[in-house]
Length: 195
Image (cartoon, rainbow, N blue to C red; front, side, top):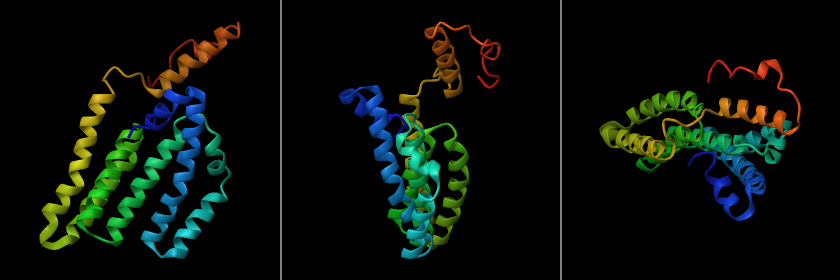
């Protein structure tokens, strides 16, 4: 569920760095089927193939599999969440409403910035559920239950005193300078303004 879930499981067996690397490779490999599904849901098979080919033409997407951060997992969650909502738009059913709710809930769990994706997706999902006629309450419930579940999961796994990613990066940079025996530059003396 969170961006660190897959690398965390892999790191238990392989070590931290290898877990991050393998997690990035698996996540990048799973992004492409998500892009195909997203394009396929909005158009046809050709649209799905064009979406994958366009992504393959972007060097940053290709390099993603070599990234030892949580970005591949974050992007994977956002792509599959968007693909699930596209399925709800194309094939409205109780199953796709539930799948969209899981996708939006996962967007909220992968990173704090997932909120910027999840809120518009939730509004769009609610509008799409509004097309279901007399099944509107059922579709809305199926859409909202996984999102409420993600709130419970977030409270369980992300305590309120969790250090933001930006502040962790700040501490990491300071530690690198200390380990190298170098003086810390003036711009690293103060924490970032957002922290």
